[in-house]
Length: 103
Length: 104
Image 1: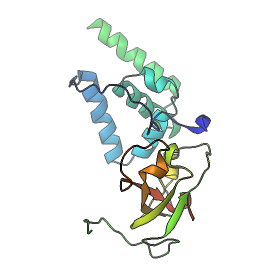
Image 2 (image 1 turned 135 degrees about the vertical axis):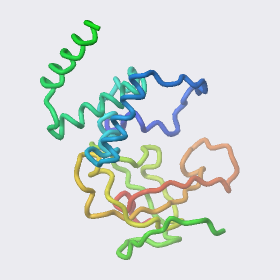
Image 3 (image 1 turned 90 degrees about the vertical axis):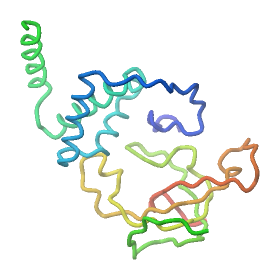
Image 4 (image 1 turned 180 degrees about the vertical axis):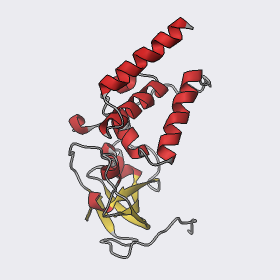
């Protein structure tokens, strides 16, 4: 039965200790959250899709931190909808990085 | 016992309050929101929550139509967990869509 089981489906398993420390949010995490909230509130993507895309990460789901996971899920869904291609995104990231490094 | 309800209309439905059901024992691929631990377990319909867009379709970018009837189902903890140590009167309530339920 485990083959169809996704990372979120852990009810009944030993969850280990709960981290109750508030880690705050990094600047990029706030930006990523704002972008995600804007896209879902305008219904350009649905929260159901984002959750599914996060779970599609498989074992990587547990390797990534929360905002890395949700941002990667957002990337997947935006590419699925054709808002941009992986190549266009890579070009844009390179362009922004050059600008950032120059500053 | 009366609890506040977010009931919305679901006129066409298979089950009503008090009906005995069983969660389907199936493990299909795709984005399913019925926990694995509850599949195959018997329960009783506690309330009809209403009809909602199907989240298994919304998850892939479709509109979730036709809507599916959602039920709150009450399970005995002893039925859910073989080694449950608590009292017999302990229950677990989960909201499960109609297409995951069969009459028991």
